[in-house]
Every structure is written in C-alpha cells, then in structure tokens.
Length: 112
Image 1 (tube, one colour):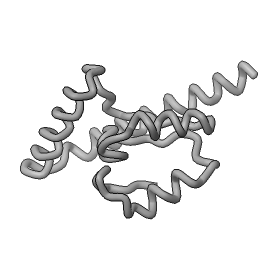
Image 2 (cartoon, helix red, strand yellow):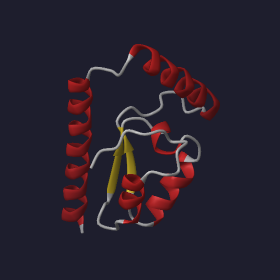
Image 3 (tube, helix red, strand yellow):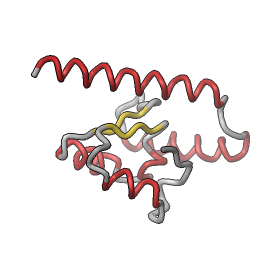
Image 4 (tube, helix red, strand yellow):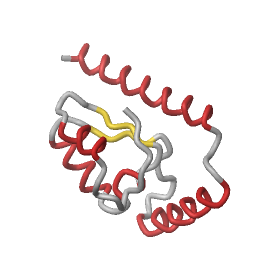
C-alpha cells in the first residue's frame, strides 16, 4: 500500500489502516518526516514495543534532530519547487529496503 502525504496531516486513512493492522510488521517510508513530521521517535518506539518497526529508505545522516528537521524542511520546499526525484530510483531503493527486511525476518525466524 502506498500513500503520498504530509506528516502534518492527521487525516490519512491509509496510514491509520497500516498502523492498526497488526499483520504489518515493517512500515517502509522514504523519509521519516512524511510519516509523522514531528514525533517520529515516539511512533518508532511504539511500533517496536508491538514487535514491529519503521524502516526509512533515506535515513538521517547526522543524528542531530534539529539539523535533521531543518534539512527535512529545506528538502520539502525544494521538492515542491523542483518536483519529485527520479521515480525509478526511488522504487529500486524501496524494493531493496523491503528485501533487506524480508531477509532479516527470515534470519530471525531461523534463529528461533
């Protein structure tokens, strides 16, 4: 299931469905900001507590929340001005992320 929306919008039926569906073990997002805008850490912690997790295709490089928030704001403005990135590249990266998640799940199942 895919959804293109702002993390500042609370009226996102597809996201609500994914978050309430306990069968969804891994939530894959392009960047963390479209998921929540703010509060990504809270959502990540909550999902981990439920035995689920969030995978960001483009994770933060800095580890500094203030810098990451500023970078996200600039990126969002630039994306609005200059358009979206190459869709084929994004799809390939997301597929790679999903494949890594599947491989990790298989490894964990073998360990048990």
